[in-house]
Image (cartoon, rainbow, N blue to C red):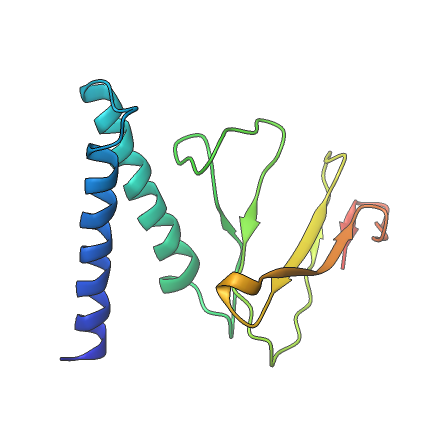
Length: 137
């Protein structure tokens, strides 16, 4: 079987497993709860596509993980989270503009496996220098 076909079959099986998990969960009270569960599941799939299929660690761009329509986890009205995949063999420069943001942070996570992820770097407002126009590098 072609690797892409195999990966897609595994994704479909995972989605079916997740569906069965929420359909049999005790907290599913009505059709609205079940509909919300399908929406949450599809939001996670869309986030995965945006982060890893429509993005590349060799030439990454930031993806908004949540917005006013797409949710992941609980709402946090005061925080915006972006994501970019990275290649450990490359060096990156992040440039941007602070705008009116009180706190800006860039956190680098990594590890030998998904089970061993740790924070490798956390650069925030206190570490950055901003020019007269709120730009930083």
